[in-house]
Image (tube, helix red, strand yellow):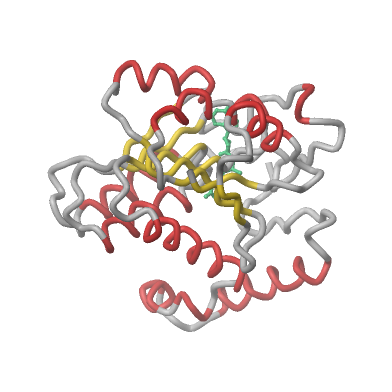
Length: 253
Ligand SMILES: C[S@@+](CC[C@H](N)C(=O)[O-])C[C@H]1O[C@@H](n2cnc3c(N)ncnc32)[C@H](O)[C@@H]1O
């Protein structure tokens, strides 16, 4: 497998050569800086792309905009844990005493399962090795331990990782956790089958909760729209695309 740190992004309709060049420059800037690792972490704004800043913004926005809604945050799926930990840290920062919510991350931790017929002929296989492979569970667990050491009510578990195919794990999770309500359902998997986890979780979403769905209205990933139409419908919900980060969509219930 190619070196994940230095391998460039794969060019698609949405990723131009300029973006790839810039990512390369950003990496070089980061690696060649004289700052210590601690200083780099504390000056992350210098290295962050505007796209990553926007990603942080919509994770914090959705947490703030569902404040007070009963339920946990379910992240389907976690990859390297970026979104999962942004959710966890946002709630720890804004709602430090909300000890009933959990942030639950589902993933195979072995990359995408196979696309099926409903993923369409233009299904976009990209991201490094074409499969979003990240055997990241142990690293995320380590990140969770660091996070736990710096939040209130740390003896109550906050982040829960569920390994396996979410198609099987979603219903099984609810059998073993029948109390779970869902305040944010983040569907960051671009395949049809895993997105029908909607079927298991949508009955647990109260009014005011949010389904975050990637990337609607985009021909590379039609499956999310298919499962959305089949499982939720679009007439009785408020569907919104944040103008600063249109790869994600909010479905307000
Ligand atoms: C687009 S990435 C998720 C990005 C992540 N939410 C973030 O914040 O960076 C897609 C993830 O879906 C996972 N995945 C794909 N099919 C799956 C399945 N059937 N069950 C569980 N995880 C799956 C992959 O392993 C990969 O980590």
